[in-house]
Length: 381
Length: 225
Ligand SMILES: Nc1ncnc2c1ncn2[C@@H]1O[C@H](COP(=O)(O)OP(=O)(O)OP(=O)(O)O)[C@@H](O)[C@H]1O
Ligand SMILES: [Mg+2]
Image 1 (cartoon, rainbow over the protein chains, first blue to last red):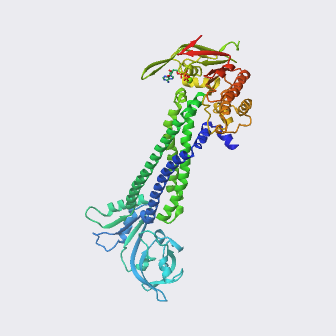
Image 2 (spheres, chains in turn red, purple):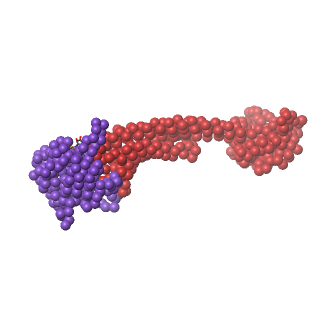
Image 3 (tube, rainbow over the protein chains, first blue to last red):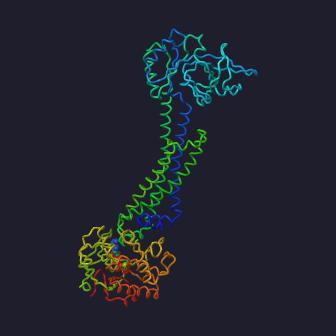
């Protein structure tokens, strides 16, 4: 009743639907072409998105950081307090965290020993994320330790660790970073713990985002260095990310291009099938025209047939591609659910849209031809 | 008045086909008319121009010369879209090969010419017409589930769905045996009387002449009188 009620208002669509049921094999083959095209577009697009996502995860939080250390032409063996002040005065809207580094061996009462990097920082909360405990606003008395190291040594929150004859209480564990960059076994202490070192080893500037980081790096370069004198060595990863992104963008376009070609092939198949089926039904369409069905109505009927092929193919193709996407994301990023992110799920809409669009475009010529065939000619056969 | 006026009137119609081998003159100045409630049959040898004339009457083709009047209106210079409107509202067709859509049921085939006119629901009239041609119990059957005579009766019901003024039939009994032809022709003439339509038929079938009011003979593109 609802099918009758709704479809009866659109006779071209209803009859188109019934026509598709007449030759199931042909309809199936045309749909299969569309399905392959959609799966090609969507899964290649999703593969690109997965690769991009994975690359971004690997670069991680590094992309908005600028790392400053003593340059080749500096008279000092580190970044001086004065230089830190200079950096602060040049950089706006970013956190400037000077840092001293060393290394030590941690040991426990049970005799476990491990080598760790020691970082003395003023603002631990800016640079580190803790999986347990908290990164204190200003680390004055406590320590942070890599979660992995803590597990290895059997240390818990509140346990003391010793550095340079002083005991520090563990206030938090640092989450291990999956990407490259700082990570590994690291003990974070208040900067005062490394007071025997006069200068800072590195100064990390944490900006809003990658673009801001690039700007800051450029400003610092201009401020401290010139063509043949490098006082401070300035490193930013934002540029690297841009390069990687632009490469991945190109790769993505290439993948999509391959997908599009398969959809073009599918639409040629639809053109062929629609043409065959209208030629086969020439007499029948002539009868429709003879009994007073308008040219526009015949046109719409055949376009609706083509659109149905696109819609069915697009839907089935989308479902299959989503399955392929789940597998792809599982393999490439380890988390299949990431496929539902807009960056990849949008290809489902693109694929479906292109399928319907390409099918309707392919149906235009056969529909136009059938609608304008003079009924006498068509009836003569 | 309405009974005497010609619903279809064709004057001095010439139809020329130009093909690679030269010009074929299928109709060489033909006059023809039919009234409401009248059945006219066109006979003549093969190639004499019967189908060509019927196509002119049915507004499926336009004459090279001459005029065509339908229901008092000169339709000679109508565009294809205007002719389509005329066919939809004033004409019905019955073909030798039935030409029913195979995926539609009998009743859906009958209402097909009115299907795109969504403002009216012709389902009741379609069922009524099928009942009148004796197919009241076959409304939901598809053409392949019907016999030849039954299919042609569905086609007759389809020709009448839009309450036409003229029904055109090219060899309506050409694919039927004698008994089936009789049934079909009986239905056709009864509906002609009920609905007051004019019927113009083309045939080789002597049997059809028993049902007809007037016979027109065409030889080599000219009416014989
Ligand atoms: N489209 C066309 N192009 C060229 N010649 C045509 C065309 N249609 C019909 N003719 C010619 O016109 C003449 C009349 O044809 P028509 O089909 O009207 O004959 P008919 O009387 O219906 O014959 P039959 O009894 O065999 O059906 C024939 O000589 C035919 O070859
Ligand atoms: Mg003929």
